[in-house]
Length: 442
Length: 125
Image 1 (spheres, rainbow over the protein chains, first blue to last red):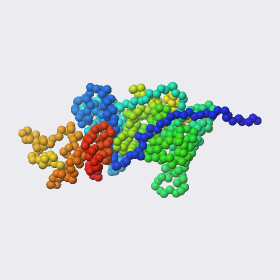
Image 2 (image 1 turned 180 degrees about the vertical axis):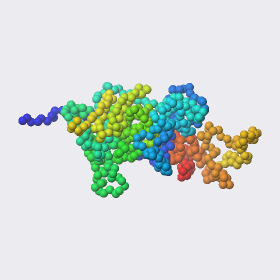
Image 3 (image 1 turned 45 degrees about the horizontal axis):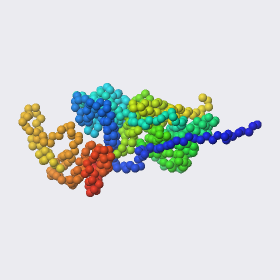
């Protein structure tokens, strides 16, 4: 019987990378709430994007005059810039609860609120005008984005749209790709620790693969190329049945904290091995409205002891080796999907980039903090990677802008349902799926 | 402040509605007619609602002075955005940082501190 030899010859080193966190504009700890409403956010959004659009419009159609909504004259062709509002017949309003007659149609549908009779209205500080014509298809737009429209006022008082100009992608810093070495960033979302659908063995497989405890040398050398792990939301699922307003007995209290303790154990294992970013999601114990603030350190007593553990905001913006990443845990895209339609969620992501705003439906239908002097969801620099978490399935594509911008769009699936994490190679912006399965029969 | 003059608020003649109205009748409100295109950007002489006048005595001065009047004009000016929910100085700072060039006098008055720091509608809405 031979003695098993322990291979002590090679010690694989994990690759290092430079990281810079750019989440400052999503922090709200410096904000003071003075009872303001959302009008200020719309004002700053319109102001910034209108200045931007005025400069773009000069190159687009320099011969046409630009005017405000109140300055429209019948029959005169001009350009107006304002915020789009989509009037939706089926959009749930709080007033429906008070209506005396209840129709057979349920008050709130869960999926999509579109209706063929939806129409668009353009609004600026002087007034609003209903948009007519066939160029703009209401099903492709949502409330809250700022656009420039070329057209003229008709006799009925509507604005007949002849052409539209969106803000477009912002400028991007060009990267010398392909001259770098292979380094991977792993994206995962929807771990949902504590839910009935999450599989602890699957999670452990993921953690072991990333930390290099799985596989032979070849597998481990691949794992050593992973420089960062980003967890994009919904890491825990706290049993909702307990939170029904009753006083919690001590047995229930420990049941509440079990999922977070389990998550902390996993995160500690990860943080020991690789730098880690964790973002809050819709089900996580963070604030509800966007921008969600970082999950508190006290939730992760084990993992937060390591400086590789980084609790981040949602949306999250950061740079690794000069490659700019921007992403959310999915609330922005899910909300847009309720009020408009597209062939795939990647189309929604593309649209938010072209509108230069990651969450145009905030604060209309997406909960948001009432900022007074800025709109943090405005995209100032084009990211190289744009990711969205908690989607139904894994989708990715390369999106090219008009000025040569190159963006990799990634829709990260829910790990508890699919067992799929995404690995992105920073050398060439290609990504592939890492699929973990614990079924023995397939 | 009834800057339009008392005749502007009390109609001296019936406004002519019939088709046979003679064109020689001068319209009593011609002096205060506002062009509809610019209406949205006005804020000046309609600050004081006419409801204050209808109770008999004219509230000519109210409980504010000239500097407050200037600040109220700043509040009502649409170019600097909505005023409700923000302190006047914060709104001035915001207008300044957005490059809108708010009037310097307003900023100095607000930093001077002897004037009302909250906006016109504070506590009323």
